[in-house]
Length: 157
Ligand code: HEM
Image (cartoon, rainbow, N blue to C red; front, side, top):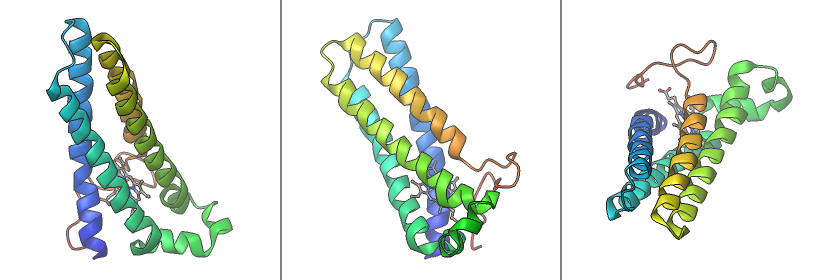
């Protein structure tokens, strides 16, 4: 169960990243070309938010029960706060993940409620760009020291 959820959580980061780039690019082009905010924009925004929420659900399953790393961290919090790896998984990754869901959700609601099409695109462009920056910061990329992981999950392990 742990490996299955971790593999899914690891792979679905790419769905999140691709959809983030698509919604940002469409918002930028829509604003530049004064294109109306189309049903496709709305649907892609929904797909992006859906994958973010899926990540949060899988992440919560890991964080609150399945992951031996967060389990170890929560059993000795003061010591965990001094350990870069434990602190990253138990506090930083969790906080940024929840922040991502919050910003993406607010962006979608505000963009849909905006009165004009340029405003819808502008809100989507700014909000989803900020969301993407936080996502990029929270991923344990292989080049990151201490907390770095592989580009792909290690299947079965
Ligand atoms: C957009 C949001 C998120 C992205 C892109 C993301 C991405 C990732 C990635 C790439 C990994 C490493 C997987 C591997 O080892 O191959 C990971 C691990 C993990 N994530 Fe997330 N995550 C997100 C949200 C969350 C949230 C909200 C939580 C907690 C509530 C969470 C909890 C965890 C935990 C506990 C692990 C490590 C589990 C372990 O190795 O035992 N994630 N995440």
